Length: 192
Image (cartoon, rainbow, N blue to C red; front, side, top):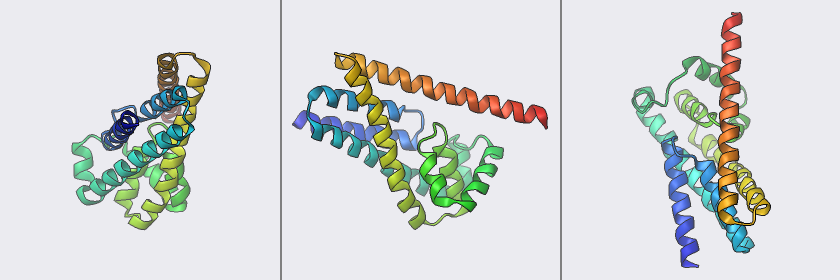
């Protein structure tokens, strides 16, 4: 049990760190932990993996939002969070029309969370709105990635195979979505 709690603590820390410094594949961490939990055959462990992943994402998002609110665009530029100002402008328009749905969906789209967090912070979205909307977003995100890990764990007989399959699947989906987004931007800029 102590090893499980230690692993959950590490999962929380990795996801929290990855939410602040978006270079860590946090979804893969949750999926891998879910795969290992599946092979332990303790349903409670799976629930704890989802909770640790969601809590890490939530705390990390709150920290990043606070840094953006108090540090502003200067800090975002220094940390290289601010890259595509045209995209941020479009996000700002959507965010002003539908704050809560945009915050909810942004967590599920690879590469969508950071622009929405930056825009929400720069646009002055209230703390209350952000705190309330981000909680179910982080929970849903953790459930989705845990489900990917659960699928990998149930398909493969060895835990390492399921973890590897989940990580590869997540990387392929992320790369495909990145490619699709870049392709859409190129075709839009080519027609204007």
